[in-house]
Image 1 (tube, rainbow, N blue to C red):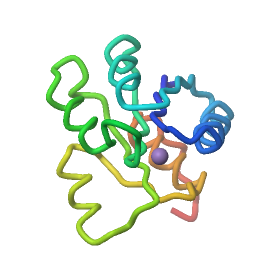
Image 2: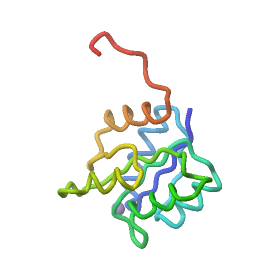
Image 3: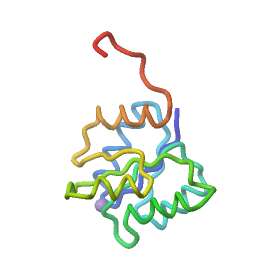
Image 4: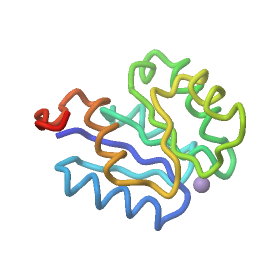
Length: 129
Ligand code: MN
């Protein structure tokens, strides 16, 4: 079980991710913007952060850079979540320190695979792998 922080301003998206992650056995905390997200990251020491890139105020790329610049939060893996897939975006997101990039609408299987990779408790390998 991991504690996962979802930073996401759209409640429906946050609810979907929460449902998937809770069903997978994780504890989920939610922040509706980067400011709250940065505070929760410091106070709650999540195992992993799902970071929406398009946020009101501080955007997800900037927030990730801030997390990576703070020794208290630098080691928490961040998975970026974005609806935008413009040229250069993925490079910019990974350069900010995100471990991976997830496109909206979120595919729950891809989400769970990335979460397993990030939290180090991957599922047993199937015979088709
Ligand atoms: Mn958003």
